[in-house]
Amino acid sequence: MDPVTEPLSLEVSGLAFAYPDGHQALFGVDFRIARGERVALLGPNGAGKTTLVLHLNGILTGGAGTVTVAGLPVGRQHMAEIRRKVGIVFQDPDDQLFMPTVREDVAFGPAAAGLKGPELERRVDSALARVGMADFKDRPPHHLSFGQRRRVAVATVLAMEPEILVLDEPSSNLDPASRRELADILRSLDVTVLMVTHDLPYALELCPRSLILSDGVIAADGKTVELLCDEELMGRHRLELPFGFDPGSVTMGA
Image 1 (cartoon, rainbow, N blue to C red):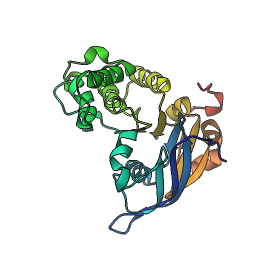
Image 2 (image 1 turned 90 degrees about the horizontal axis):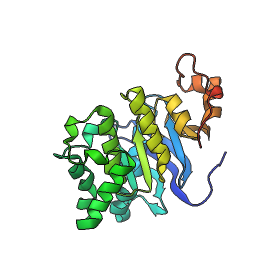
Image 3 (image 1 turned 120 degrees about the vertical axis):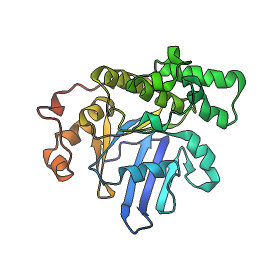
Image 4 (image 1 turned 180 degrees about the vertical axis):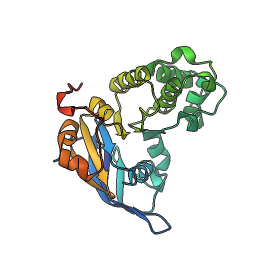
């Protein structure tokens, strides 16, 4: 199946990687994501999901194959531009929030990239508005709820105006209201989204397409609802839906 048409945000071709201790995490990963797509990356623990994500902005390099972001190959020559184009939101927002105020956290990346003055403030205000946190600009991040901190973490990445937003387990530890609020935000964004998650209902809600990464290769690539309804496929790759959840009965948003 090849649902992707031009232009591409992300192309991964033949990506293979072994850690220095000899553990082979990826064995030749191939997929393409079109600009504006929302795609879930699913797979059991140990499948290589984190290793794959860390290749997307050059945190890990040195394996075989290629990763191309918006037409630029990930490599030393384009590294600064790649890291602006690929924004990663980590599972724990406290890994990304370390400044005294929300504003300073959101401004940190653009300021480090050389922005200042009115353009820097525009980036900060725009990013906070997009995640519904404009009124919390002067608050210390550690005074916010977990869900609010996750939204600010998303804003720190959006302030860089990325091509691709990569989210690692975005729904983890969220209460139902925060989970819904984050879903509404993610649906409203005009960026390409790659969502790494074990939360299969959330993947179905937000991502029309899913990739299943298993044993270091892409084992399946298709419509999320079709993959989740394939009991044999799900069982083979240790993916389990919540008890009583029927993916075929869910009406998905665009």
